[in-house]
Image (cartoon, rainbow, N blue to C red; front, side, top):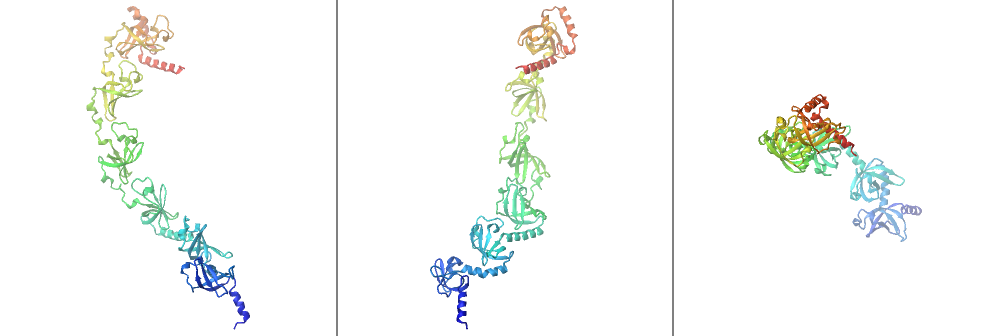
Length: 560
């Protein structure tokens, strides 16, 4: 039997602050619970310390920790949570060493993480909640998970947890198993984890694989987001495995047959096909005939006659068109298409429409240094070479006698169907005056004409029948002439004597000073002229014209 002294001592220990005692619920209020612990006054416990205060009933027994034996109201201050914490702390220390796994229920979200009840309150940092830190921590409150104890501070009596480490560990185990079991050709279920410009990363339940954009579809794809969405579940084919680097290449289109495998059976050369323009480039247009099968219409195959600079001038993206198959290369997965082949090639009828020697009319479409292009009909041009403009005149550039937009008449000289060329001539419409030059001019004839060009060695005179003659500087006057421009002007009318005709080289020599010569004087002058060196030949018209043009160009360059 206890003595009075022992009983008082035991009673004092039992009801000391920091002690755990049993109590009985005597009243449940809205925000607190009244508990009788057998002390001189009742104790009060905040309602938030119960999982659900609505489930607490009068008569329930609870273990409580005495925080104060008496507050300002004379009541005992009790804590159910602290009693549980104190009871559980030693147990936690035994079973939850650092690195151990424990089950716990998320109690609340706080700044920087979550409070988890594992028997005692523990802290779960936001960075350790999941592999990707969540944006909303509230979704975890009230849920029970398994955690790893990463740190215990006995002095402060706090515990730090990690859920992320367990998830990563589990993923690593699954990844190792997947890499060991997986072989190329396997079809695996996965979830789209991330989408980039070049493809998508697929979560294969622990292992990420890359699904490249080129392996998504046999058809053309501008961006992976056209086919996939984050979170979408798909079946993929394992294409390649690098176990050392833990990389897996995946495919989606490989689940379907390659449309190029039997391409020759679907499309034959000469066949008419329909398709959609999917890409326009400077050299042609790509046309989708079916998913994964595209053909190229080269810019030269767009029209027989129109000069198309780039495909976008006549075609539009997404436009539905018809074309003809020109060629198939299964190995390189290429199909050549043509649009102009849908119509008859007008050049096939050119020889019938414009036979050689036919007279034609057309507008000058363009002038170049070597000739003039004449439009005979839309897309069909003929070219008049500069040498076929005049029988008699030396023409350096077509613009000397022709203008863009002028309508001209010409004769068909030659047709090159293969290279789609028609050669035309203007001079062929008239007789070549040099064929019968004796009818027009004889040595000794007096002629009248206008000065057309001046050169250092003489002047050119335009005569009848569109023929030019050359007056050498020595044949201008009996007096010595140093500079031809001092005595003659372009446009000036002069009378001269024909002193030489070279039919084979189409050259006529004139003399102004010999206009009043007798026959004897003319014969003497001819002997002098015949004795001149070739380079000084006053009737070397071809070279004279060229030299005159060169001198004129030099004078133009020197002009201010």
